[in-house]
Length: 287
Figure 1 (tube, rainbow, N blue to C red):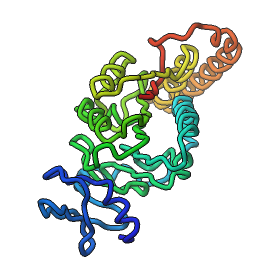
Figure 2: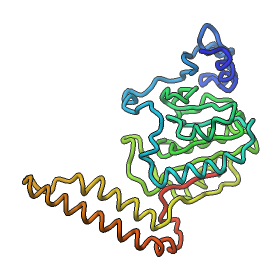
Figure 3: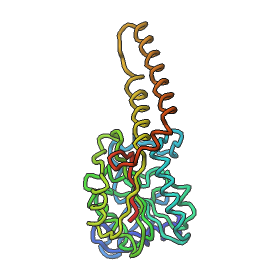
Figure 4: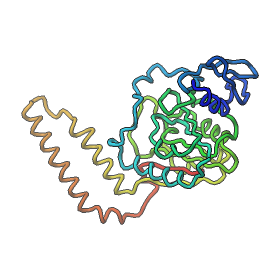
């Protein structure tokens, strides 16, 4: 591990065994100066846990934005707007950073610590984020946690940990899906209402919690219409007869096209439908 990068990372760490804050580099290992516990360090990363047995199926690749839907793009805009207001010397922690979908927004911050269970490229601290985080108390000005909380079986613990590691007056930015298909099964546990999010963050010590809804009723309808045809109708086996199956799929494609044209015609009216918390693709949190 590069010594400079190593020292920077180590200064943000806390020993999960004895809670001593600040580890030192000894012969390529991160060592707790209190309990002497050693943690493996390699390639600019400190390992507090091993990767899950089935983690290799999650590809360590740059985010494929060609596959992003409306919700993901809207979430990106939320983070772009909020992070643009943060000073460049802000210390940023990204909990559940993954493959780094927001790297274009965080590259301007000299100090950014990425934490996740798998050693993706942007991760410097490999740890089980369903347990207390191996990070110093009140270490970060900004905390990012995007599309993570639905995958945490004990979310109150993680949000509480974010409340611990953030500096007084710091800002936590988070996002969660709401009306969304199950993903990364079997590690998809929750869908949060605005009321649940407010309670989670309030209980963790965040006093001011702002919830932003992503998606109008018309946009929700369009997303689910597209998914219904793409995932279910156009992949269905309607008949064992090849000719009949081909004919039915052709009809389904025509029906999908008609639905799309009708939506395009009705879009101006759909946009006039009042927004509703019952019809949201995702929610973003600023606390």
